[in-house]
Amino acid sequence: MGLVQEEGSGPVHGFRLSTVSASLPSETGTTHEPTGLDLAMKLHYLKTVYIYSAETARDLTVMDVKGPLFSVFDQIPCIIGRFRRHESGRPYLKCNDCGTRFVERHCDLTVEEWLRVPDRSVDESLVYHQPVGPDLAFSPLLYIQMTRFSCGGLALGLSWAHIMGDPFSLSHFFNLWAQAFAGENIYSPKTSDLQRVFQNPTSTVKQPDSIKRVDPVGDLWVAPNNSKMTTFSFNLTVNDLKSNFPVNGDGEFEILTGIIWKCVATVRGESAPVTITVIRSDPKKLKPRAVRNGQMISSVHVDFSVVEASLEEIVKSIGEAKDERVVIDEIVDDVSDFIVYGANLTFVDMSEVDFYEAKVMGKSPESVYCNVQGIGDDGAVVVLPGVVEEERVVTVTLPVDEIEKVKWEMKKCGLITPLV
Figure (cartoon, rainbow, N blue to C red):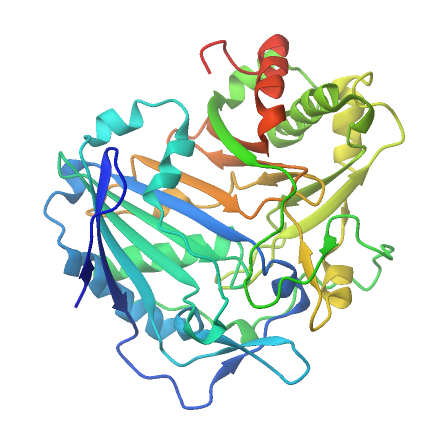
């Protein structure tokens, strides 16, 4: 049974909470041991929203949405487990089929009205999020919110504990749901069966610059912040970006990173960042996909003024980023806590994540939004694919006292229009 209560005001309202688990029980005593890279992500969460049109989703019931989850959880039972700690203090996952929380809400707007807002960070209100803890044994790792729009359209919002896996893992999970919904047979390989492809015995990195140790948080897995953070997003096309900021031989992500790094450096003045973190897909992508943290985490350090440097010089340095996954995996111990996103100004390339493969009734989502919960004080920029192949959605999370100044710098250089 679900618990019904009304909460808040605004276009999104209502609240019905229930639990969804697997259809088959896990073998008694089954556990999953997180890697050092997994534990480095312990204080971060992914918030993702898939929005489907009324034409696609009008006839979908709650059970239509819940039903395929049973078979997905049969394939990936660790998602519906709960964390415990070894005597050493190191967390491990007990695959005990405790389930995920499923929230039902309603929105007074149509899908068309909702998507009319240019800043897609509004989609975060379509995600129900709770951190892991303080009682690990009772804390779900995944929340799913189903929001019905007034026109019959549907939003499915996920809050996903990053310790389970990266954005490709989240997308893999949701694509499995879409395949199961379509009546297809689904399969997800067990993480333990896969080779750790990010191991690099020739790595020269001794101490990773891309993560930061924080004071112990205990069993409430929330990233600490000294600044209040806020988020905005904007859209652009690859053609416009490359036409307005021509840099020979480089991809749009590197160009975009260079431009925004320069804008933030201008605002921060003497404290302008000379080290950034870059997170993107592993060029040796795993096939078939699995649920794991395998994204490439690199740092870029420069010995020149980013404010005064040319865009070409900045972009060239980004191309020399050093992969730090091996050493992160090694240095994260049983009890220490770290942050990755926002430890430095962090740039995340999700443009290759196949969010739009999650088809319902043969139709792709009208819009997909994804951002990180638990970003540190240095901020983060996430680059998402748009609904059109050439489009990108850029989400920027920075301290409140910086965000408008950075927007102004972006307008001055021509990256965003005065309307944003």
